[in-house]
View 1 (cartoon, helix red, strand yellow):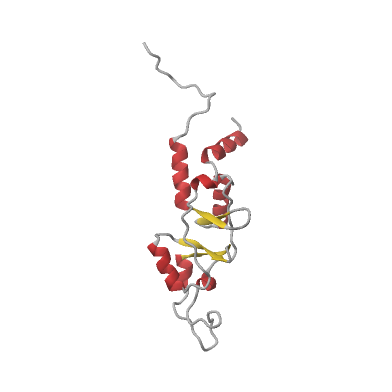
View 2 (cartoon, one colour):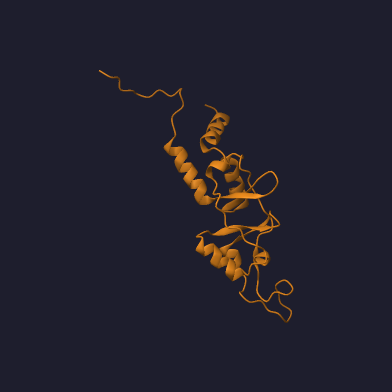
Length: 166
């Protein structure tokens, strides 16, 4: 079997993002205070979430992104300040704005390559209109690979010993 066939077979075994993604997604608003958002993530036991505004994913915020910002910003002096009229850093201040997304019908293998190349642990999954419909996280990928390996069967051209009935 050549490399192209191996890659194609692997993609078939892994299936699509839709099969592996979580559809119960915690979304954050860009105006949510950072510490409140950290509490939301911890309560739902997730490390990060899409930031959604007007039904569109505009960023991704992780717990470490949110904790990197001081809980209360300097409101006077020459240092960084939160957005106008806020006395606390918000999700919009800490989120990653360059959003890499997956589509539900995309091969899972392609989404995994995107995650690896971007150095991220999760991708928001959006429909054709850009609406969030799920998330694919590292744990989802591990679960999908384990499931594919459990169901793995050898190629029909590989001979295996067989027990025949008496």
